[in-house]
Image 1 (cartoon, rainbow, N blue to C red):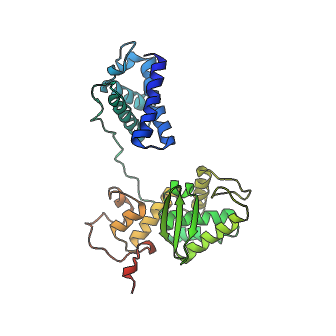
Image 2 (tube, helix red, strand yellow):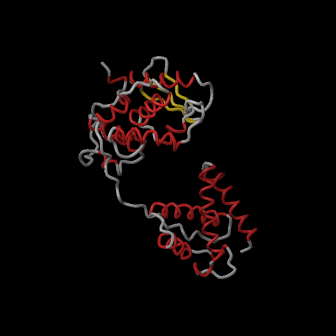
Image 3 (cartoon, rainbow, N blue to C red):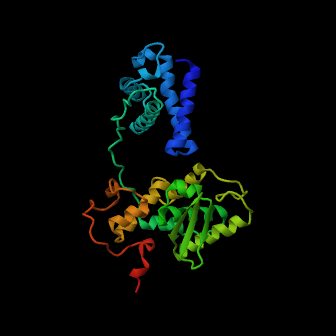
Length: 307
């Protein structure tokens, strides 16, 4: 196939993802790059994928894709999760080709990504270690920043990506709730007295440096997600906790459950759509979901439960 025509197809695929799938620009770019890698191998070595030279889009089939996926695993040594991602991308790419009439039917309609079945072990650590993380007062901006990050991850169950990319936080008038702004999305979270102090400590120190990104250094420069994650990880290692921000979030869910929270509340705390895989973070296997029991975390103390 001529390079100009292939480029037109890949550009159309990106537009299709934005218009039909509503994916973010970063995801669209990643999908486009993965689809381009497949097409590049087909262009360089069509015989390797059992394609004629030259080949047309209507000659792409499932066999070519399966050979390509085997190439990713055996020749490039990609991890199963990465190969599964490429399956998802190519399913979308072939869906686009079918939608545009390049193919009469989608040959990958029944090809599903083989996600790894291994469940990671539950995070190790106890409540005392987490309390050590939160014990130091927020006297300096880096310490106040760390205290607030730990509060958001461990106490509120925010995903690391949410915590890193929030644009603002506001303590509500009554002081018992926190509004977290994530672009156009706003989350309203219960807030403890200690948590409110951590928010106020960081906001006060940040205000001294003027307006700018939410997460900043003492020089007023914005911090990348990588820098924020490393600060949390280093602090966790200092108190004997293995892992990183995502582990800290799961520890919060584990301690929440050990304190008496029901399964559905833990599911909501982690933002999980399903219950599968959460049993790894509980002391025992999941029982049948029974009646609501008294919640063990302030977030789930509904007003009607109060005397």
